[in-house]
Image 1 (tube, rainbow, N blue to C red):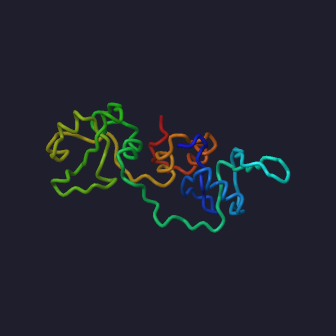
Image 2: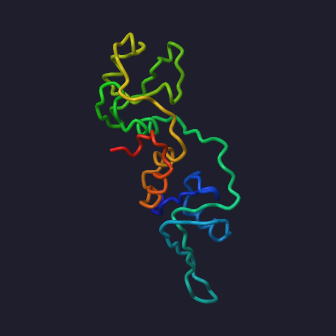
Image 3: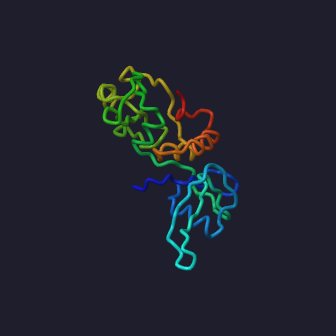
Length: 187
């Protein structure tokens, strides 16, 4: 794993698209593919020129908009436990207990054994105790209620959930793109 931060990559309209490696950021810069940029710059050092004896450097901003970058075909976010627990802020949807990754489970509101699908709108974070109690029952049969409603996270939320080392300027940019109903950054 590189110690260098990832580069937040946008389309030219400023819509967050993906994280790029620092190497891709350098390529964008030297190939003049960056339409515009904001944020702090990181200086990457290369080799020494045998003609001048000087070390090459490339300065890459933390947020870059790529010229002619097509928007991603889908704005959907992969349904993984990490993304789910992040969306639900590691909070059990039934008892409200804060749970660690080890204690958290994925619960299907409408059980799969009853035709429920493994989709964002049918899953919530649950503590093991509540998940075991609910088992393969419906909410009504288990006499349980949801404390919050599930929703489908958008691309900005997915980018926040997928990178543990987001720079402050990148987080500020992504936070401005979050939908109003997002729980990702709520305190």
